[in-house]
Image (cartoon, rainbow over all chains, first blue to last red; front, side, top):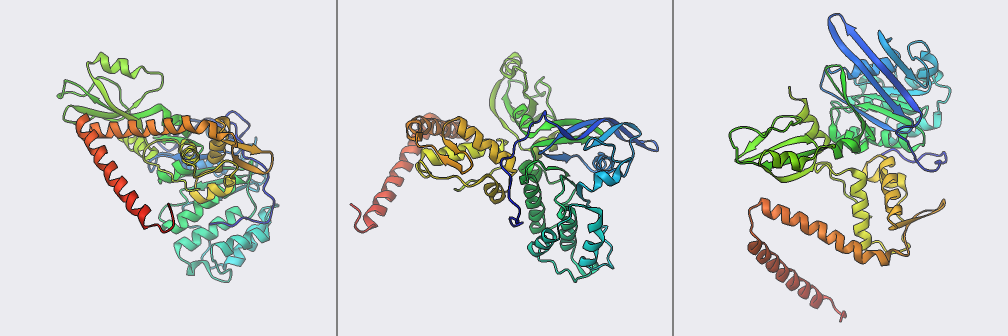
Length: 309
Length: 139
């Protein structure tokens, strides 16, 4: 866990889903040769929100994050971070932003203190004392060489570099992948800590949907380069339910549109349904069935059910 | 304050916090005037977004279960006793409904279910009696 630090905590966290956006993307498309990596993607992330970005491998998450970091320039559409195009104003934007990628990119020949000294000048708000505090929390010896450290320790160094300037926006690309539960815990705590400093915003992509569900205010779901869901996590949870029906027909699935496939168990059929605005009872009685059970779904369950082609 | 978050049943996390605090208050485990943990420390302890805890506290405040004292923190309301009878009833009703649904699923009919409940009650009473008689100096 990351300790409370010296600086006074400002009063409450409030966010407004319709408030000022830290990141705004509109109609973003990107091709790599024949492959359409991003297809007309739009999203807005309000200040003070934790946004979880989920999708299968190759869905376009990293490509999207690279646009936000200014590493790729929009071929079509617009990307704006703190009101500016990050590919044209990288310096101004990167100095207010902390990021950590899944790839292990720290130079192995450097010692921890050297890489801290090297990184510091890029960030006007860099805090030596906070960097120190993070290293102590993570039990990292600054005299150690990167290449002598475990993967988990290297991730913690990366996290220290991403956090030491108290970024207004923290961008994490699959920060937890391949790491043990203790390091994952540190990363989650860092996300929670970052957002606890009022007004900060976090965007992180992850395959660990339980973690996404735990800390996200909003989720964005990308599939084959398209944004299929983007909004408050809670909306997703009230909108979709796993519904079990009993029908007289055990030969064919109920004629009600499901998110994934209907699964059969005797004369019971179950599937995740979009119950938003639909009169489910009416639809079910219309096909001569009755609802046996209906309950909310976890993000993981929802994602698994809706991601099968 | 013991709060447990379940990710599997699809209930929004803020709702889980609200329900559990309401329950702790209704059950008398959180007494009127007791301070709830600060938003940030609870968020870090149960590893959820502080926004979510803040949202839960706002909801509890709206319901009158807790009250905010300007900058000092969030406390269980003094007036909460008046609410608690109703809340206790609604908490119990929710749990009974859940039990009934699950019993149906498991294939118990009403008589079997009542029988089971009575049998469990007898066991619980016996245990309680034994525990009471083991306690020296109490009654």
